[in-house]
Amino acid sequence: MMDKLEEYLRKQNDMLLENFNYVKEKYLTIWEYYNSHMKDCIRECKNDVMNDLTGPQGIYWIGLNTKIFIIGKENIGWFDNEFSEESTMFKPIEFAYYVVRAMPNYWSFVKELIQKTINPEIYEKPWIETLQYVSFSNACKCMSEGKTNQERLLCNCVADSSYQYIRKEIEVVNSKVNLLFTRNYRVLEKIYNEESISQVADEIDITRHEDMVLIETRHPVRASDEWKRKVIEIVKANLQ
Ligand SMILES: [Zn+2]
Image (cartoon, rainbow, N blue to C red):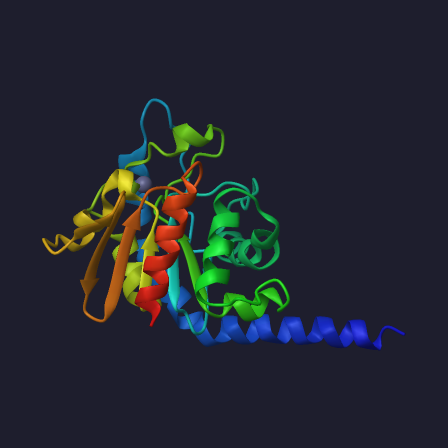
């Protein structure tokens, strides 16, 4: 009676592990980079409001055939109180695989975007199949567990260009389209220093770097439907 269920679960697990094994080197390269910068970063990001910093909030997920790399500012909801390198490496992957699909707000727009640009059958297919085409991360690497959402966003590493975490992640993930919801901080300008950044629509900037397209825009929560349509249209056009 359990054969079908067991077979289903085994298939999901195999696909998850296969994806992880295939991109393991990428995770390791990125984590080595965090490890060599995080101590200084925490020291510099500490301030009166955020004095209990730890980190990093690592990259959440790298799909083995990534078409879009999506970078938010930071996220809450995936981390627990225990902090160790092993748990911080594992938790984001667990988060992307088991939690994101049910998350509202920011993540519901991310899922709509993936559905409308890459995978129209997202809700019928196993989540792991969809995840193979995307990678997720966040711009803020320091984290303050005790503070409110707004206060957490004060950390310098979102806006400070000295650590270049995002640039490193973008290089390693190597996705054709990179979508950053960090326009308040002008991260693109800081990491690529390029004059070729142009505004293509309201609150949407775009530039090219080597073979990649980089799009930076506002945070999707409380954005207009018109903006959502526009972002989806731009991402879709650049995936061709
Ligand atoms: Zn920091």
